[in-house]
Image (cartoon, rainbow, N blue to C red):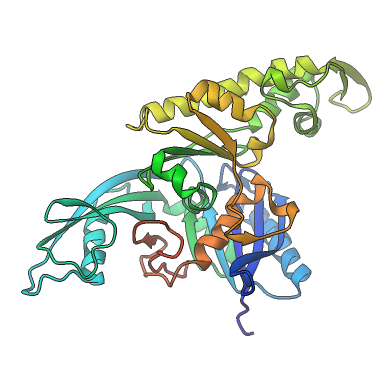
Length: 416
């Protein structure tokens, strides 16, 4: 069957899978989001596959449903991963130009990056992403693209993300089992940051926080590039657990209460009133005040942001972020941005979606839940080809969009 022009981004989240399908719109010169869905998945916890059969079934339901809606097969599939098994760090690489002409080529740049990648990692780990942070020529720093310039010593700083080969392979098997081919695997925070943050925010110092159910991803940008990233192995599902335990109701009812009545900051408690709560067996109900729901939610939200604060404090960039952007399902709760300002000490925090000049999409997709999946499609479609680096991708500096290298096709800690 001929390959279609449909690009799909699959976000492997916390207990759910989210995907969008897109194609290039030549009239607006943007990527048009054609369809999208989010489905629960019992086979995935914290971004890690716990049951291949369950995950494969969810993938079939999700992607098959999108294909039926479009009447077309997916042509290219890009997957965003997350989880505590992912680790990110910075490294430095050098390459001596020994030729007489001293002119730096693309091959020299790639060799410098390869040298930066040559570092010890855990036995079961592999590189997922390598992002260049900047080049130096003969100790002169601040060079974004040294190709065509002359020099004897080429140096590069890179941001590397590694992940467990076992977890990545299990995820690949679960997706490939129904017959889908993976054209690229990314650490989800990388395309998300590039598509949700503005260039000005990345230049002055910005923190992006993806609030998932069982994980929280944190990234810090300075001088236009990603300097630090980390996945924290717990998230907003702890709020659901608290509500379920304290209110003596099922997790499903607790989730509905959280989504309908939950607020994270007192000023968002619009009016006092009572909310019906079903008992665990569903046979009876009792009423509670809305302020009582706030009393349950607020301490947990504060604790989650305190964990993010601790993560940033140990990053080496504690005083660098000026603004913050929240995304992911957890960012939808009213008052989350206010809590982030108070606890993280940022000047301004907003809720983020993929920038409108990058996509054409219906209002239903302008939701933080779809942000990572949409960012994956934009990130992949803007790349001018990919380098064969195994499962990892190589980004040649500056903004990711339009400047990607080539990437291979192949592939309760709180008592809640």
